[in-house]
Length: 398
Image (tube, rainbow, N blue to C red; front, side):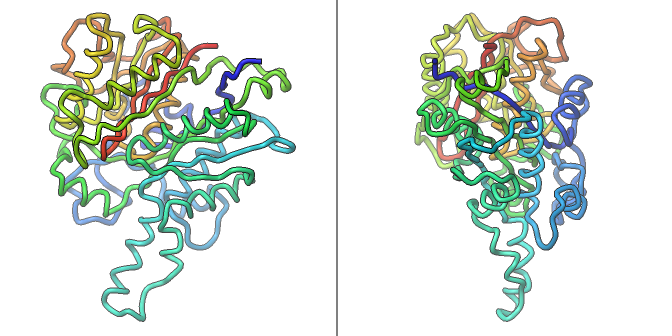
């Protein structure tokens, strides 16, 4: 028996859809989820567009079947992870199951509601709004609701978090520690996040243009994306035929700057190179790159430099889907893993939006519209975070 790791199910919730199929339909039609801020209570409501999930907290709670005070982050994560498990359709009884959850915002959306009253009067404020603040609290809530208890852990490495969660899930299965892992990430929009990115002066006042020469910055988004990973032994036992594997992965840290990527793309270069080496694939085998592609001057320049160092003149097709969803922070590696795998399953390529003057100008490289009938066997997906956290996943048709 080999130690392959198979994708048995997927779940996604973002600004462009509340299910995987709704997300894919928007990608096919070119319909962005970015727009005026509707649900987040912020003084910047009319200054910056964002990619909000199209449900209020009350509506999300009803969908979850939850009562009381609930973090939006936990609700988004639970709904997407539940979809992934339902898609897999595998009974969890008698299996060693794990939840590897990624988040950076965690319950901060509730904490923000606590402090105004508390700062005004230290006898005020509702403590139930702070008990979900730390990242692990979100994972505990989700694992309890999902019925997963054998192994539960949380990863918070900024915008590479969900990719690292998938990576750890694959490692646990390859090591024979678990049979099934739900891995991915979730983040809700918060005032802290919006204000922080605004302070860094990397938010776009218009709809973002990742990997375009005229890019001005990023649009924030929210959402959740999860994969159900299973071992080959479980696949054989169930008589299932999943079509896609996690064939390679790697992470690296160039420690260049707290928030900026190195100009030469050192961390992303190392991550992509190591993931390719692990997969046993050559650069010519990669059919498509799901770019991290945030739309900031620094990120897109750094990532494109690293890609050229790896691929030379043999550039594969590529695009960033953040023009649809916004940058969903810790969730982006999970949501975009769903998109990458869906490209393999559907033999199609999903486009970037608003690309007029591409950073990589070679004809036929950037995917600007939905393309069907493509040969997509191997997809490389990048997720890069603050602090130099760089992660790359490779998905392959089995």
